[in-house]
Length: 285
Image (cartoon, rainbow, N blue to C red; front, side, top):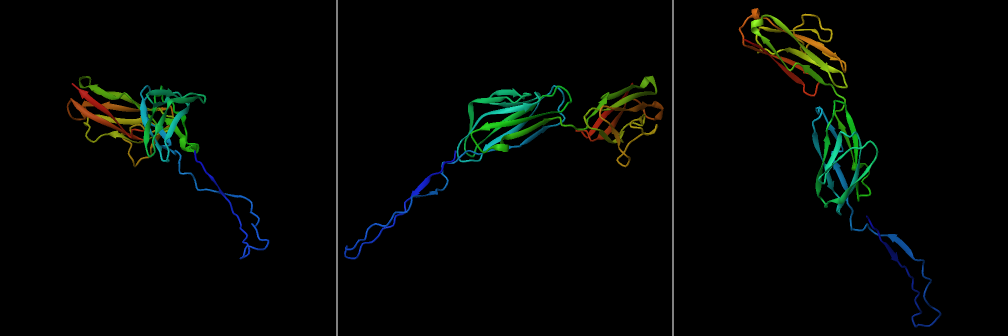
């Protein structure tokens, strides 16, 4: 707490007697007492500083946990005491501190640090925020720290968001395998827009190192013409709306040249959190 003192300034006027002490001279009237503000007390005060003030967890898979560190610093001139917090929002977001873990609550609930966590002058400490999604749905929460800094205000607030709305790509199967002895064959790759935002596919083709026995047909992807073998950066991208899918035919033709075993790679470029997804293709004896 800041303290200030009021100094009392007494201004008095003195009347001088005559040089010889004679006459009716005496003390002059004394003016009213006056008060003035003194400089700020040097006792000082704590100052709470939090960094970052917003935390985003992106592309966290369901039933896995991601963690981020929030740094709390004391830039004041007296010890800072963290007395508690409110973590309001989705329960998939949590705070880990002082050896405990608290999940976010739907309603505003005051939580206390017992005893208070003390941050010395010019010191800092880390608080861990966690995100454990049960599905691909986005989540949000607000962390508000309580302390003995009366002027913390918005400096004590950290916004948390998990899996913010973003494009998402799911490819199945993860790899394609052909039995060379069975002759020519075809398998289907399914590309699904699994996020809450449209997925933009900017490239899809066999890698140049792939064996000649493999080929692609993108006719089932976003209205591309049948027989389209590749999508490049020079082409218009394919956009899949949230929750929709497209298909790609992966073909094996032993008469196209080369003998088994043969290897290939399908490269898929998009605005997914992982910008390049690769699917392995193989033909075995």
